Image (tube, rainbow over all chains, first blue to last red; front, side, top):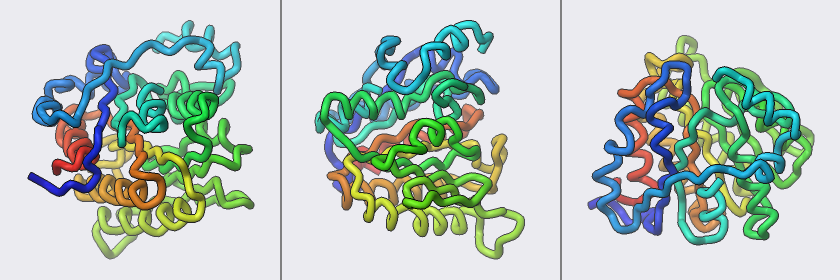
Length: 76
Length: 205
């Protein structure tokens, strides 16, 4: 089945909340997930990881501290 | 963040990252376009801190300009940022590049062909010269026919870019490729496009 090109371990990073309130322009764009990935997850070299929460310390590697309360206060 | 970290560390060959709400419109002190924080930049800065990578090449094929990412990496010579959007720009050192996407109503070939040819022209040569440790592809499907950034594209373009990015990463950085989901609003398109992209990453397409 298919070529071996790219064969190694592939990680899929996902969180169930992304299917409930992902990308709020129209809401549930990932409504079919993760079930849509079932056929791929049968391969032993394809692994699903649940995205862990990010610590504020990590967010501050890219953003000013003042952005955190702005994001928290946004009705998004 | 976890995906970039594990690929950079060599625990995974490649990764597909669903993210909750975009990322490339989040800059140092602003956010918008449903992007709260810039997941990609946070992730590779963390990987740099742990010493698993230094140079990152980013291709952004979301319909809109990655203004937040550019804000964060504009002065970073170790980041190549190529964004296919609505304008043309190149920084003096050639590491920050914007390229206008083909206008589907003003071309003689198919929209897929024109877009894919453009990606082939603008990203692989720059990535080869840049010699990244890891490549990130911002995969937005908002440019698909019928979505909000419609450029007349079909699955042919997206899967063609996926194949191309896998090849570029294979040739330039040991296959280390992280695909990050960008824009796109339709469930049917997400369902039709995302699993085949992941199948290509896994070498089972």
